[in-house]
View (cartoon, rainbow, N blue to C red):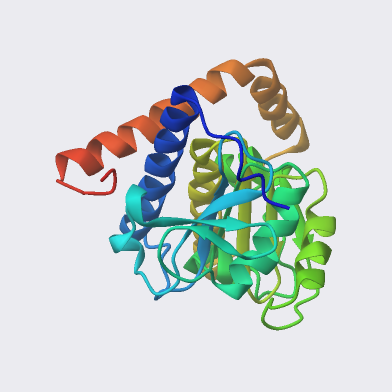
Length: 254
């Protein structure tokens, strides 16, 4: 059941506006990064202060049209409770089960290099690049493609496969990245695609040179020891991304 009786405070209102702006910015950046596919795919974010609804791009809008003001609010059951437009069925089926498990932000795309990787018999991201090692341990692999995700039980199955990981590679389909914030989820999305891109290029060129286990361990230790610095970099990157959008005259924040 939706809690519609509790009025948000001024603090909640500002948090919700900031959340809308960040999610809209991610859509616009995804267009620039080549992650958009028609009017399909979906980015969602839990409404701050709520446990039963999330923001979603209205179905039919191109991501270059998404603004803070035209995101819709959708219940975990798929009901549009605020805003104009329809909720894409696949968005509800894939994202709602993950949000029910406490995940704040869920980004799903068919971005080209990662989707190409998911079409291989061995769709694992290899430790052949620094970026690959950076995201490798965050990934769960769903090897069972069952067609369009238009039923909640398919989304529940995907959420089960994701488990405690942060990224889900979907065989023959695409990818899902998650995070506590839009900035965190988008950072993972961007570097997943970069790692997939260089791996696919290297695979086409010939035999890859893998990073040694010892160096992989060193990188993982460094990432764990400097988690605060990693989080700072994530925020710096996302803020820089928004500054560039602003300088270009984007209306995402309106």
